[in-house]
Every structure is written in structure tokens, then in C-alpha cells.
Image (cartoon, rainbow, N blue to C red; front, side, top):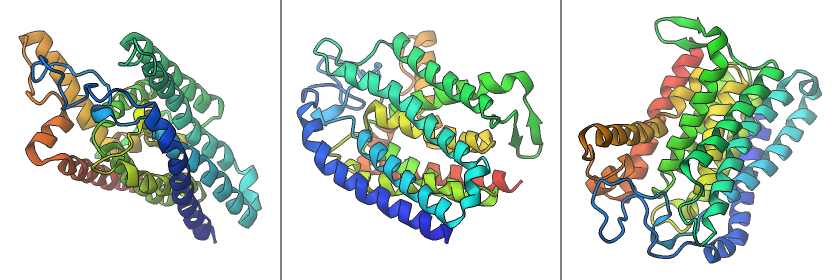
Length: 341
């Protein structure tokens, strides 16, 4: 019967996100940046190829579309978990409700930092959002607050499972490692949010993998959260798939990063987040190498400027979506294998 609750949560997430999207799209379109705002793969006049590109949305597209699937997910999880608890009332006192709230909390804490960045872009003199230092401070604070909540709730993993090595204890390094992982994942997901459908598609595949992983680990009722988010992301792709009419914005990308990183941590398996975030890690690693190479050699390593921009020049915008989903599928298979160890 719990399977029925998961299906209901997924369908409800899809329906509510579609409905909220229809209501919010006109408002977000009115708040869209100017058509000439630069973004990844859309250089301003006089900007040299490969130079760091300002994280502003391309083509004047409305951002903060992530609010659509955040609202849809929250409502669907509430209804789905209520149905699960009606079917099995003993789950209310087993600590699973706390783990579910922690999984949601990771997304909402990082999403709040992203919302602050998006709201800053609405100011005429801050079209690029918060300054880098302020943005990183907010994201770091959100990550630290989530790790503290894990510790207070007695759910923080003190180690991780590595292929060939088994379970490795981290001791005092566990808390800073998980906070740093969430911060890095948030920054990487933010960079991927400008490619049509890439972030949403990768997170959709990751949520399907999390449903299976939680089943393997014995947390099947908690799969209501990734099920609801997967349904919501499927609806959001109606606007976000190429040619995109709506972008997730920093609020949506950071919420997805919090979900991909926070849900595995809430069930004590942070190593799953390392695998499930594979497409985001690829984007973040490319940006890191680009910055280091420019600092050392004084010229860009990648002429395209970013990983998704390079993919777009090689095969077009749809190619970016397919590659990100393929990387997410590879990460999902690795996560499922890790869950079985």
C-alpha cells in the first residue's frame, strides 16, 4: 500500500507543479532580466571567448522557476507522508518523520540562500546577484545549519562507504566534510542551471535513483520525498526543456543540490550524494580547472568557457540535456551499487 502513496505523491507533485507554473510564469516573466543580459554561452559584445561569464540568465528568460517545483514538492510530500502514516501509523514514532524533515530541510536551507541571490538580481544595479563572498557565506551558513540539524537529530553519518574499502570512519572530519560537500554541490548546481533542462533532468534521474537506494537501505517509506520531487521535476521540464521558457534560478538549483546532498545524508549515507551529484561535479570541476588555469597560465583552458557551453557548441542545447542525464544515470548506478555494499 505504501507504493500507492508513492505513486500518489509523484502524480500530485506533477499536477501541483504544473498548476503553480501556470500561475507563476506570467509573474516571473514580468521580472525577467533584459534580453541582452549575458549568460553562459551568450557573451556580451567585446567579451572574449573563454572569459568568466556573469551568471545572469540568457535570452531574457524568467528565472526563479524553481519556486514552482519547490511548492509542488512540499504539498505532495505532505499529502504523501500523511497517506503513508495512515497506512502504517507506527511510522510516526520510529524516527522516520525526523529524517524526512531533515531531507526536506537540506533543500529548503540551500534554496533560501539561492532565493536571496535571485532577489538581489531584481535590483537594477545588482543584475549579477549577490557578491561572491556574500553568496558563499550564505550557502556555507545554510550547509552548516543543515549539518548541525543532522547532528542534533542523531542522523549525521560519521563515515562513508568506499568501493573496495568498505565503511571508513571519518571521526571529527565528518561534519566539515559534509558541509563542504553541500557547499561545493550547491555552487556546481548553480552553474548548471543556465543550460536548458540540464539541472532538472539530472536531478530527476537522481531522484529515481534515490527511491531505489532508500528501498535497498530499508527506508522505503521515505521514498515519498524523491518520488514527489521526481514528479514535480517532470512537470517543470515542460517549461525548462529546450527551448526553455523558464529557468530554475539559483533558488531552484540550490534546492536541487540540497535534495541530492541532503536526502542521502538524512539516511546516513553521504557517499550516495557523491555519486548522485556526478553531472554537477563535472560542471563544477570544469569551472574550477578553468579558473586555476587562467590564474596560472593567464589564458582559458576551455575556449567555450564552461562544461555545458562546450557541450552546446559540440552538439547543441539538447545534447547538454542528454549528457547530463547520462552522467546522472551513471551516478545513479554507482549509488545503487554502493547502497548494496
